[in-house]
Amino acid sequence: MKYKAENFDKVQHLYQETGFNDHQLHSTIRFKGKINEAILRKAVMLLLDTVPILSCAYRHDNGRDYWKKVKIVDDRDAFLVVHDQRTFDYFSTSKLNALNAPQINVCLYAAENDTIGIIMNHMVSDAAGFKQCLYLLAQYYSNLMVSPYYRPNDKIYGDRSLRDIMKCIPIRKRIKSLLFQNKESNRVNMASFPLSDDPHVFPFILTRELDSEKYSQIKAYCKTNAVTVNDVVLAAYYRALVKILQVKTEFFQMPIMVDMRRYLGHKEFVALSNFSSTVIMDIAVDANESFDETVFKINREMMRKKATDIGVNGLVKLQLIFKMLGEKQGFRTVKNHLNNPPICMTNVGAIDDSKLIFRGAVVENAFVCGSIKYRPHFQVALSGFQETLTLSSNLYGSRQDYDRILDFLSVVEGELPIIEYSAKSAFAKA
Image 1 (cartoon, rainbow, N blue to C red):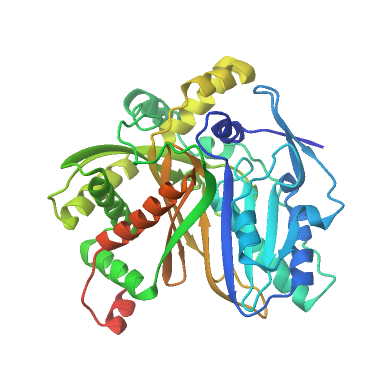
Image 2 (image 1 turned 90 degrees about the horizontal axis):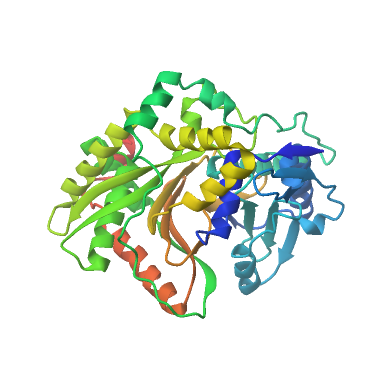
């Protein structure tokens, strides 16, 4: 069985070729106590069966690409158990080969308190779809704990193309996006994060977890000032960049991810797809301005973009290129014109704790982050779970880069607002 490779699948494939990132999605789920290894193994195999694209191998043909179904016989191809932190870390920063199936791997770090690591090929899904797979894995695990012979009724193999989203965007809006929003995507910024040129590099994922108290302060600030958590964290990110670059004022052209499912009339999980687009934030940040000034500047710009069909420009341009030029020439054109600003941010959003439930086990924390970047590219990701936020940054870098980014995440946290309030009243207002 074959599945057509969609346009965003091909773009993600190009990110490896053009040296932007390794197109893998990552998640870590930490438990209080143990989880059932045998049941988790069965749940992983059920996931591969339920979402057929995960059991496919990619076939690249210069634009005429497709996915080919492969029978997964050995569960060791998808599920691994380790017993030490070093091996788990090695797994967490590894990458899947798209030419081989499956397109997702799960690793159980068996310890006093178990941890699950999940890697998925970004070519088959964006972060929103990845989270849906995490929910399915938890659901299957929970059902198998009750009934060892449980089998899900449905399969997730709906239309992976952008067709349904495009139907929801009137033609006049598509034309308007091409005529008046052509600078909303695919631009290059001159500013770059100070990374080393040391040739001795290794992949790493660095995280900084913001506890419930800090998160409560951020939510209180958002409520008081009518801004979003994304606005606040992005403001802290901008201000930290100005500090580390040691400049008075800096203009940043920073791509922000947009989940294009916002244009659909439903939220059902019917296809594992890449439905994300980007818009470019282009604002100036002054080292002497207050945090409030920075966050309100960002909020105004985000509100403006949301009011003008956010994300449509990049989506329409990509579809138009492949439609007018054909698959092979369209692929070459996209490859030759991909411009990724060196500094970017992605907000993965909140992981729904009501859906990430593993029966008989307690999830202590979970986060999702994107691909591991190649220098000179640099990204910070934001992920939420229950009353915590996790900042992360992934890179193929040197030890010097590792230490510098670790310090930088601390600077970002230090820029976040602090509000004096009683915990009870803050949670009541949130």
